[in-house]
Length: 110
Image (cartoon, rainbow, N blue to C red):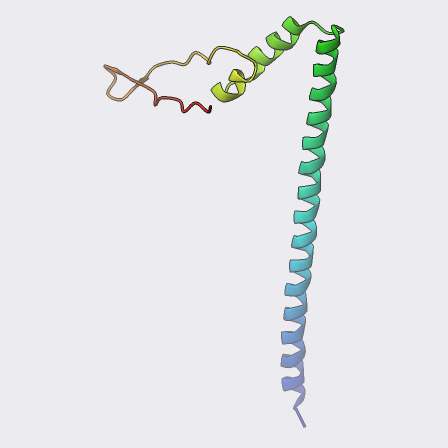
């Protein structure tokens, strides 16, 4: 028959295992909730964009207003290209303080 100390040690080990299992379950639940939140946010953005584009196409919203908003908001060259906006103006980078460094050429997709 196991001594009381051995039984306590066994129960403590079991408790530790169950706490670890509970932590894994909670982590999975948080990850699932975060994924759902991201999906809902993405869906909202798609629906808002579709609604605005539909209004522009119907003439209910001026295309110039959309382009001005996108021009003020978008910073990435590939995002700006989707709306035929010029690439953002950037300050030249200097390595030694004397000569500007040419940025790497953008890869264009066919």
